[in-house]
View 1: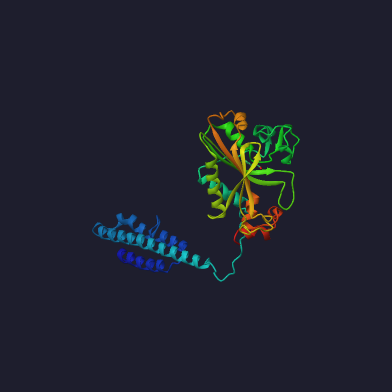
View 2 (view 1 turned 90 degrees about the horizontal axis):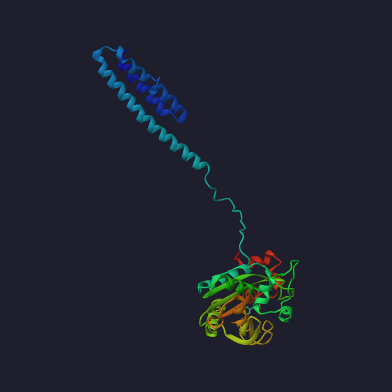
Length: 344
Ligand code: PHE
């Protein structure tokens, strides 16, 4: 057979074979056979020197054309096979939307934690920085420097848990964080300190561990008016714009004057019910102007600076907000209770 005819026959034969190939391995094998290093076309190109000179150019040209043809053709075929394989793979792994779904129970934060965050955010929005202190606290910070001396009856008021480390207690309130903040930085100071506190107390409205948030503001010319404004903004953000607010004179060793802040009963709207014990008012927080003795203890000049502080219980706010009758429900971790606040 003439070399030219042989080339054409090879082209036809392999074109067909490649056309029919439906697998990458077969395609690779055919590629090697036709244009690989030892392939048919390559062989022809290598043997050109044996071809009579007058035919050499024509045959060489034809062989090169065929080689280029197969390079393109095989490339296109390879692409086609790959696409087909992918399509098949996708078909096989298609999601079956008729299958019943399975339920994933995701965790969320506890209602006390959510309330704590909500309240902290309100103060953060007003510019208060968040400050934290340890739960095992120096007796000195928890009491002495807050103007509660050793023999003071207010120490008994707080039902302290003592621990077997001299000079330390489980903090009975978040107020020691005030001391820490004032020892650490100079006025102006505007902080809130959320966290756990401990008192030897357990009944439907008291738990031995509960949460408080403390606020402290110190600057030149800080007045009682500023305290009222901040507390009003806060209480309206939590309980709504029209919530009635009342301030009653009270006593705390670390503030002078001191007040107790009440809101109109959220249950009976002021008419008197069991929750407000018939008074129409609910006690929400304690507050007052920082006592000069406290400033003295931390080395702040009480002639130059004034300040106010406030403290409130998170469980109490949570219970009022959601009308929870017993504080122990917050700590027994019954999922039937806990999941009522998460929306599912
Ligand atoms: N520490 C007080 C308490 O636990 C609350 C309080 C804080 C009162 C700050 C006044 C100022 O009862």
